[in-house]
Picture 1 (cartoon, helix red, strand yellow):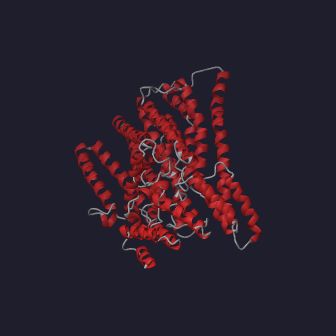
Picture 2 (cartoon, helix red, strand yellow):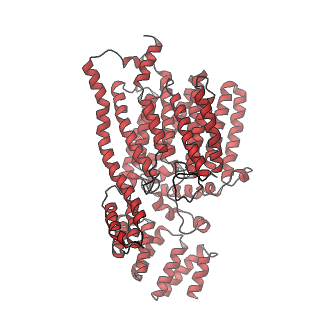
Picture 3 (spheres, rainbow, N blue to C red):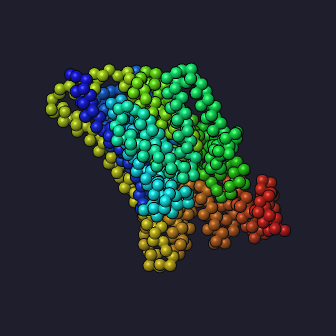
Length: 618
């Protein structure tokens, strides 16, 4: 059989690759305006549906073509499976299991998200080969055009969705300027590298140029350094590596210079060195507080972490005193803004180490692949690797947002897939089209849909519950109008739907209490907040809500008890100590009132709160 015919057969057998890549693009695009969290929760649902269907293809591919134990795919698969196993273990040990499963509110970086991303990685490693890898470049350009044009509309105030947005208007479909600019950067880099490929269709090159121009305008106007960081480090890798393979002496010099510039750039973003004036931004520098808090969390519980995606429940306990003094006593963070530290802090040493091993192994495979490939294949490889490096660069200072992460895991799997293809015998795919009986063909054809359907059944059930939780809370926000008493009963009904939903985010149940409170259901709201606190005793939001309730009911003793608990998990909160001071004074306990005053003066002597404390006690 000719090589051309063989390749055509392989093309047909790999049509699912289109589904994989377009599915990844759809996750980035997808949002639900009738969700309480229209971005992250919507993307999680689609990610699970996508990975559920792909799982059938993955199992089917293992059935037809088992993994070669000497291949790079085998090693990466072992790392991935171990990562998922230990992440599941940490999820089971997470204090609030549903948070470990779903992820924290407005984040959704729980077990299910990483399970879905892992399946994408594994199937990408199975199916991406040199004959179909250009599909990644093509889809990146097409989807990037959509995202960049939408971002352009937002910048010009023409957004067709009326977002309640505290950020820069350019959020695209990611919900945040940082995420939007980083995603556009990764996709525009793929477009740029695709332009340099000889066999890349001219129409895609023209579309790519258009996309790059629009996306650069969007990134600059997003007022976010994240996209520029991705572009900077990715281009450093691409240019220095290309020159290295063209002329080693020049390449070594460029690599050395790139390393120095890269180091200065990182230092500049952290407000150090000569590039500070160009690159420093407070939102980047503040990451240092997040990282150090995450490291302390890891030290406190190195084996299973503080709980999968539970960073926000522990941040105030582990933050440095300088953070609240600079940014505010009630300001917090729900993520370490560094994927590696986040995983170590929340899921423990095994999960963190395995994730590092995975990244390291992809990088090792990338280097081997570059050395073994040549010509156009080497350019294709270098483009993918450089874009993947850009993704890893942003993950050092950012949250593992699902809309961006799907591309990072797809590219990582593709690098492993291309590495395998270099060592594969071209005749291997031919095995899959050896003549067999029609009955066996029918059996094989039904195997994948059967497995996919089997997986999708629980995924759909879960998604339907999760969907209802999101949409019900959103509807509550719409109908909760204190001036409309006719809405009182519907609000109570929808709150009960949220409370009784087994897949409701625990914070959504807590939030529902305030909708009840707005409509006059004081006792019912108080009951829900008590239940929320009981289910998650250390959650700072629930404690604050409970303390406010006790104070409003003039339950001084209970309020003091709750605020004492807050002081344990939030030791640098001068505002909480001031409220305790007032409570103690009203209760005639001047000894403890003075103790609170002294605590405030000890670490926050130059604040308005300290001044108020002195005035209160005279």
